[in-house]
View 1 (cartoon, rainbow, N blue to C red):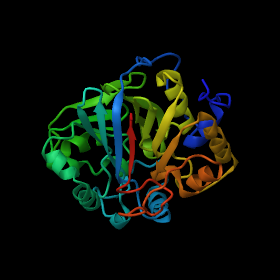
View 2: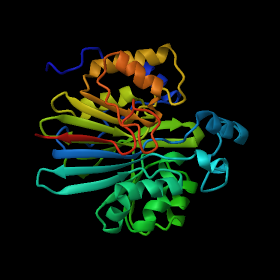
View 3: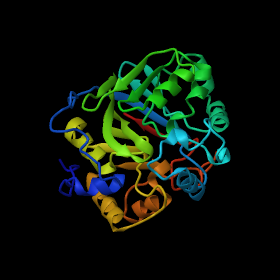
Length: 342
């Protein structure tokens, strides 16, 4: 179709650069997937950014890792909040409220990640009404993208309001992570999403475990794919550790019936610490070939990456820069991606 990509599919070389990690594998090995191209449709999708800012200052965070032994150290041993008192004022965290309406008019709400700093995420939940929704059982699940501190350690705040909520995590969690879930007071169902076994959440929505090994000993990431009638696919990531090009390839090869990706939301992990090199230029260049209509990036994408994406002509949607966000380049705290079939 006219909307098909204009560049050849890239091999595994560039996605390795995206993840910054030599252990990258393809998202699915061979044809090992149980998702068909037809996984239903939505009439409406809203991704509300509760918070996209993982931490306030890069240098402080990197120094904390260095002092603890480097980027391969166990994250539970660094002394970060809530397990210690290493610079708690630097902690924030990532969390999204996702509202999806299926063709039959049923609205499904999910919390995708739960932030990090408890007082900050508690405040953001209150400001966006997430606390009330949880108390009224109007959010049906918590989906944790991956085990990193800034996406997962705010879990007790969500469970204060609804301890019985279903939680979905990617396969590969550490024993410390599993213990943290139970110690946080979780009384509901815990489902593990396995690599090569995508889970349909409801018609038009699927969660896929993207295999990857990243810093601090964390493995794998749950990525969300939504199919909006008349618009195409929306890809929602936590950090995109598996490589944004890999995720786009997966969407086209496994899910996109009309070769169309309408929107990408979330952390793209291109320049999380604002560093740049030629390999990252190649990623931006390759992204142009996927004809994504809306890029709503934030979190670990890197401000420099968002700037470069705009310079390259990619349709980047900025935000308000309010409620704790540090830039208008990102779809930030309190901002939302909204897609409607009409």
